[in-house]
Image (cartoon, rainbow, N blue to C red; front, side, top):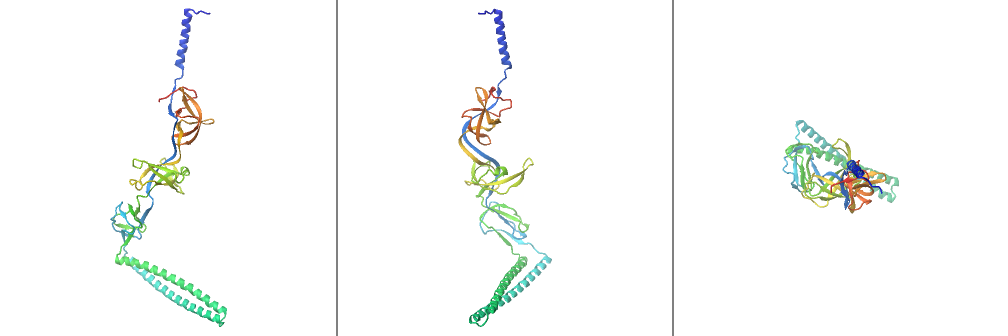
Length: 388
C-alpha cells in the first residue's frame, strides 16, 4: 500500500479542487425556456374573420317617376304596413315648348288609336262574314252542292281573317296604351295630381335616402324597408378558406357589443367571389358566407360589426399540446419534453390543429411538460430551467 506524504496529499487535494472549480466554471449553464403542459380538453378548428349583420329581406323603394319629392314625414325606425303611402311625388313641370310637344304627341297617339280601332272593326267584320260563308259552304258540301275544294277555300279564308282580326285587336290595345301614357303626362301637368309611393311590405324603415323636398329622377332610391328582427350574419373570408366551410357549420358571433356569444349556423356560401384590397395593399379574392342566428337578439341591428368564428371541426376529451411546441424534424413532428431538468426530443403524431393547440394521437401523455417556442440553441439532452 502506497502511503502519500502530507505534501502529496495537499497537492492531490488541490488538483481535485481545481478540477472541480474548472468544471463548475466552464460547465454550460441551464438554458431558460418557456414551458407548457399536455392536457385533456375540447379542440375546435375554427376560421376567425370579421363580418357584419344585415336584414335578410331588404326592400329598396325607388321613385317611380321623375318629379319633386314632397318632404318625407317618416323617420328611420318607424313601422309601416303593406299598402301605406310613404311618399308623394309631383311630376316635373313642363315648360311651354315641352307642353306643346307633349300635347302634339298626345294628339298623334289619339289619331293612331282611332285608326287602330277602325282597322280592328274592319278586320272583325271581314272575319265574321268569312266565318258565316264557311258555315254555309260546309252545309252545301254536306248536301253535295259544292265541291270539297270550294269548302276548304272558304275555311282557309275564315282562318286567315280570324288571325288578321286578332292582330288588329292587339294593335288597337297597343295604341290605346300609348295614348293613355301620353295623355297621363298632360293630365298630371294640368291637374297637379301627385303620384303616391306605397310600401310593398309591412316592416320598419331602415334607411331614408331622401327626407327633404327635392327633385329626384326616376329610379332614385327613397327608402330601405325590412324586418329588423330577421337578422343574418355576413362573413368575409378568403376564397381559399371559404372552400373549407360547409352549410350548417356552427358559427360563434363575438364582439358585437353584447356581453355574450351568439350562436349561428352557416346557411349559404355565395357562389361568386370578389376582389378586395387588404390593409397591406394586396388584392385578395374573397367570398361572403351568410349565417342565421339560432336565437333572435333584439340589440343587434342592421349593419353592425361582428367578429365571427366558424367551427370547421370539433373533438372533446382529447390530448392537447401547445401548437408552438411542435417543430418539424426528420420523420415528422417532434417536441422537447422536459424530464429531470433536461430537454428530450420526442417524436409525436398529431391530428387536428387549431390556432393554438394540436391533438396528440401518440407520443405524449397527460401532464407531460413540453418546451414552447424552442430556440435554435436547444439540443436533445440539454439542461433547461423554466418557471412553474
